[in-house]
Image (cartoon, rainbow, N blue to C red; front, side, top):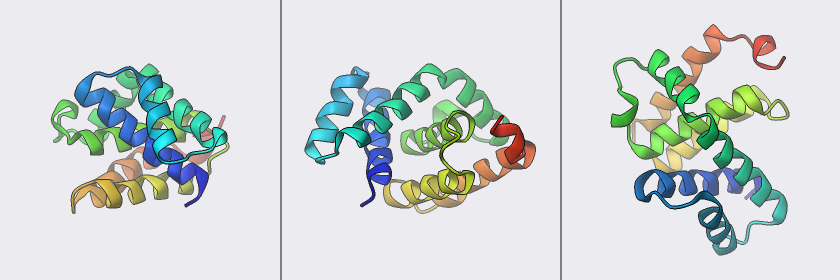
Length: 140
């Protein structure tokens, strides 16, 4: 598995634990990374994702609310909510990740960790967001 894909999976698992159990981010990231033998570069990437999502949670949730109005953010499955948060964070704040890669990775995480309908839901919300925000606008 590629390092960044592995790091995204660890970040998602960390966000799940932080969301559901209220544990501190750094210890969770480090024990998950150690269990999965994630190299330092991957730990740094996972940490950036987790801390970015935690720092910008309200902003990311507002985007989700706008593009999935029929689904209250606090009622979304924890996995789906955090996949969307991570992808939206990457799309807006990580210009070295191509847009298609960020979306594809989110859909792959939804396939691996979410329900049967999660990949379509994630792809739909991200697609709606990207229709409103052209690539050039996101990558300024």
